[in-house]
Image (cartoon, rainbow, N blue to C red):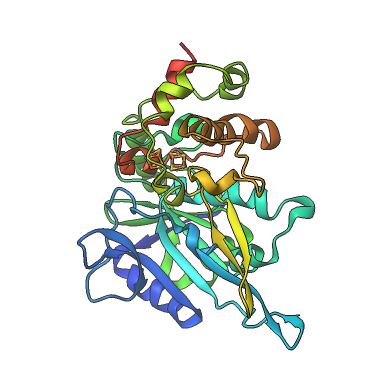
Amino acid sequence: MTEKLLSLANLDPWLARLRERGSVYAPGTDQAGEVALREWPQPEPLVLDYKNFREPPKAFFLPRNQTLLYFRDGKTVELNSAVPETFLFGIRPCDARALALLDRVFLDGDQNDPYYARLREKTTVIALACAQAMPSCFCASVGSGPGDGSGADLLAVALESGLLFRAGSGKGEGLLAEAADLLAEATPAAKREAAERIQGVTAQLTPVPTADSALRLRGSYDSPLWGTAGQKCLGCGTCSFLCPTCHCFDITDEPDRRVRTWDCCAYPQFTLHASGHNPRPTPKERWRQRLMHKFRYAVENFGVPFCAGCGRCIRNCPVSMDLRTVLKELGA
Ligand code: SF4
Ligand code: SF4
C-alpha cells in the first residue's frame, strides 16, 4: 500500500489539477451554514474538521431520479449515456464503506447495473478519516471505523501539517503517481500521528451489539418489541433517504421515458399489492423489515450488515427512533 504526504500548501494546487480533468466536489460551507460536499472551487475555504455531511454522497451513484432510457418512434433509446469524470474529495469513511456495500448489490456477479457501474467507474472517491465522532456514530460496530479505506480509491488522514494519503485501489495508486511532484514520502512520524488520530476517534465510539445480529433477529420475528418500537414511526422516509446504504427504487414509465426513483420501505404503499392486500400493513412490520434487511438478510446474503454506522437515521429521525436501542434490547 502506497503512502504519501501532501502539505496543506499543496492541497489547492492538487485539487486544481484534478479540476482540469473533471468536476471536483469537496467539503465547504453551504448557504445554510452547514458543511456539505460542494463543487470546488468555492469562495469559502475548504473545511477538513467537520463531523459528517447531513446527506451522504449516494446520489452521485444512484441519483434520486434517473432516466434509464427514452421512448422514441416506438423504440427504446439511451441518450446522454456519457458520464463526465468526477472527484469526490473528503467524504467520511462510513460513506465510502457504504459504497463498497452498494457495489455488492449493483456490481456483483450477474446483477451488474450499467447505470450505477458507469457512475462508479467515472467517479474517484477520496475519503478523509474522521476528525471526531458524534454520539450517534457506531461505524466500528459494523466492521468499519474512522480510518476505514474500503470503498475509497484514496484515504486521507488530516495531520497537523498536511494530509497522509493511502492508496486503496489502482485508481488511487495512479492519482498518487500523477501527483508525485507535489507529494513527499510518508515519514514514520507522520504514520504514527495518523494512527494516533484514528485511535483517538475510535475511542470516542460507543459499541453496539451487531456481531451476531443475524442470529438474534432470526429468533425475534414475532417479538412484541417490533410493535412497541415501530408504533412511533411516522413513515416519513427520512431514515431511508439519508441512509448511505439504502438503495430500494421504483421504476416508472412516463410517456417519453423510463425513470428510476428512490423508494422507501417505511411507506405504506411500498408493498401494497394491486389486489389491495398489504403484507406490511402497519409501521410495526415496516420498521421490522428495515432492521431485518440491514442486520439479518444482508448478513445472510452478503456476510456483512448493510449499515455503515453513520448514525444519520438516528440523528435525523423526527421521533428519535434508534436502531441501536432495538438491537440492544433484542440481545438482552
Ligand atoms: S425517520 Fe423515523 S419516523 Fe421517519 S420513517 Fe424513519 S424511523 Fe420512521
Ligand atoms: S442504517 Fe442508519 S446508521 Fe446505518 S448506514 Fe443507514 S443511516 Fe447510517
